[in-house]
Length: 115
Length: 117
Image (spheres, rainbow over the protein chains, first blue to last red):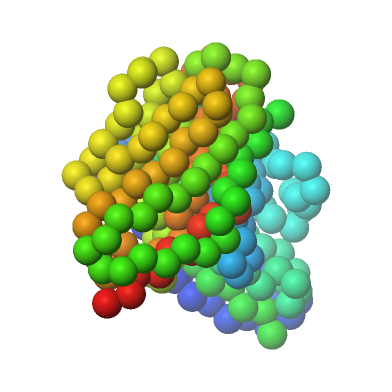
């Protein structure tokens, strides 16, 4: 149980375009989803926290207009990187939980490459 | 704010041997949760073990055990009978208790474990 999927696993896009990453909780209802960014050989950096049906809470330094997060249902959250640039290339990981303080179940991650 | 420190960027161990990964943390809270996560080359984060601070007994999960020293704010992970599949990046993480103003997981920088055949 407690499986979280991400789609796509890898994506390559051209600079200036937008790309959407989906995060799904497959066997439980996730009231809270977290989006992390991970640079090579570094730790996970929390970008934002989203609760179903409400606006996401972004961490300091994360541009909310660039990284659009939607958590429209209890099983799906999306991260849209708008007007992507090469510096947005990274590994993006989502996690899902049944509450802010509940155990987080991690997705397999999405590798974004912006050319 | 809480901080988590992993002082060993890399460690190696021979297959079937035992290895201990170090983690220290800083907090003013008396109740909290500590975790060890494994991130293999697939990049999938996997929870290895968790420890509630109010529990004095060290958590164990098969070949994985922790040495939790609350006064010293130390939380090391011991892997016994190391296997090739244990090779991964290991992250130590801290979380405040429910009701706290801070719900986030605070991660250390990680320790890359290599298992030699």
